[in-house]
Length: 387
Ligand SMILES: [Zn+2]
Image: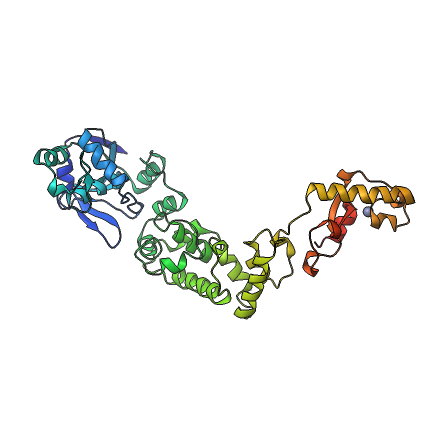
């Protein structure tokens, strides 16, 4: 790979023909059309927060270095931004009047309202640009390893880079587009940030059953995302029809997996909702996230709920009570051992060898309190299993 250092390109040069797409939230072109600012493997523009974009302009006005920019040469006098898209888009948007900065007196100033000398200062600022020429794989490999200024690429942004092509472009339009009206609805079920590709990653995870890179590689040159979209929609429609309540704990659950396991079953949404309310109100249910898989599985696997366990003082008190009585009767302090006929019948276990057990299981209405607690030896407790 060949790299050339250029220091003759100014902010004004880049801003010639600068195009920012408000709808997709990204800078598209600059340098009189010869520079593509957001190639497929770049992340979306995330600096439009009134802080990071403003900081870029402040740096320029103070004469601070903007840092290195990396372009790849894709054709004779044609370039793509490899690193620097956020900074370029920030000054491009400023110069084209998309946001204001505050001056020393706290007055918001759009570019057009700046003093002429300050406008000049911005426009004449020279940039430090490395132009790289190499094969696609060399450039992508390098893209993975250079220190991207600001926010490092996350897993999905790297996958997008590695599998860049029409499929990624279409998929990003649908799943990493904050202007997509469905994002609001999806956000009830999906955790993370739409612009950082978390929704796209979830959609890919579901349709590929966890084999994201394999799926992306197979579909790399597809010019439609029909399957991806249809599968994702099926999962979301299924969840929202089974669970009519919206709870914070639903965000980020493995809905794709749950869909695969349970979507053939019939559920009555009203009954599901009643059960959900009951479990949410149950003090002993510690894991509210587990409630969903629990209900879908027919309310049998209590482990999913992480039922509240007995605390140490309760266990100690119950241990002392049982052990005193057992010693009087010359029986084991494990009530189940005491019923047996082997050597353990009279064995006094130390506390560390015993576990607390619900006499009446939680699922049958038993409370997690001293009255419903007994200490069993490890073996018997494990055999009893059910809390
Ligand atoms: Zn026992």
